[in-house]
Image 1 (cartoon, rainbow, N blue to C red):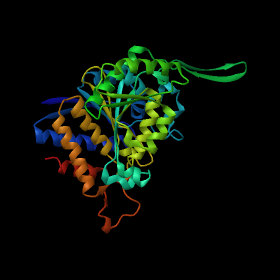
Image 2: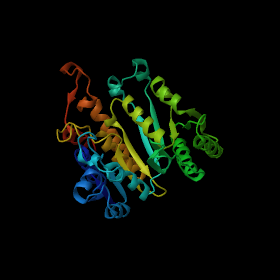
Image 3: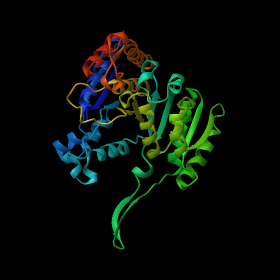
Image 4: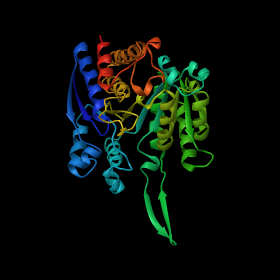
Length: 367
């Protein structure tokens, strides 16, 4: 089969980790008889440098005619980068929000799984790490505070900022249904996270989720306030299967979940619409402080490519082979710096490798 993949290399370490994911996809193509054709698309800081805006209409059009998009992280150092001297609507992240809206990417999937090989990198108590965890965070991606009306103005001599949080029942229904569908293929449990004791939007969220839950009698459904969920993620992460939540809560909780896996460099993500199209990217940032040093962890981006194989191309076997290859490399003791133990010696069998070498090792285990 032949697949057209739009590639947004992004900023910082983005081009480095995307290169390794493409390397892995090409190896999958060799082994399984597929062809992946890539079209480079500019977005983020590199687009600002080239065109003056973080995302052009031409870039959106190129993404729309792709079968899927593979993306590295975007943005730079907010303190030093000239991109952040621009108005908010011209900064790198504005391009990402515009792309999500243009492609109608309403469902963000962020799996968080603790490899037993990385238990030593988990910051949680040893007994909690030993129990392990395997969860999927389902984040609504095109509504809420990030897309509501906003303004900053002077009122009665005082500068005042307003951000508007808006959800309608249709937006909640479609992400809830996707969450329950995924739970049916996992451990059949959904934890819906909201702030229903305070927010009207959360009370509507809970009402719609309860309605959807009636169509999935096999799935256990519970509600949890977001502050409690943040606590439970570090107290007992093994209790979770699918966490279903709105945009801002999902943004925060998924980053928390990523760090208890040992490193945000381990966390892939998929953003889906109502079709097979998806945008696949690592959950971490562009890490400009290590860009160009060849030490970034490409595993999250490689695993994002595996999610692309599964969700956009229905290549489940190929996705499983990539995931197994990553696990084998970790089992063999190879680590990038972010997931290496503090003390590395011949006795613990750990070898620290760079970005490109990690990609090569994954490819070697794809057979």
